Length: 84
Image (tube, rainbow, N blue to C red; front, side, top):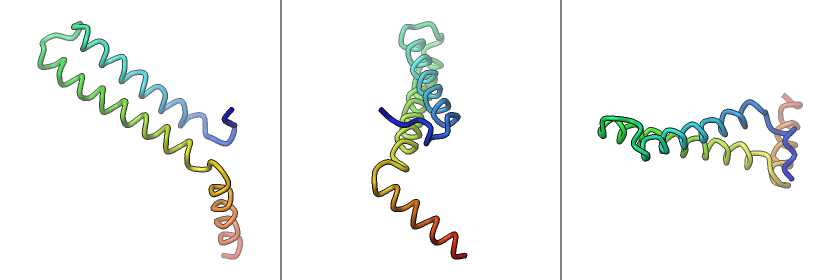
C-alpha cells in the first residue's frame, strides 16, 4: 500500500480528476452525444491529451520520492541546504 501521507493530496486529486474528466469527454464524443462530428473529433483529441497529461502527472508524483534512492536524494538535499 502506498503511504499517501507523503504525497500532497491536491496533486493526487488533480491528476485523478483530470484523467476522469478526460475519459468522460472521450466517452461522450465516442458515443455520439457531441455534434457535429468535427467538434467531436477536436474534443476527443483534447480529452486524450488530458488523460495523458493526468497520467504523467500521477506517475511523476508517485515516482518522485519512492524507494531508497529518493530517501538518499532527500537527505543529500537537506544536508546541502543545512550547510548554506
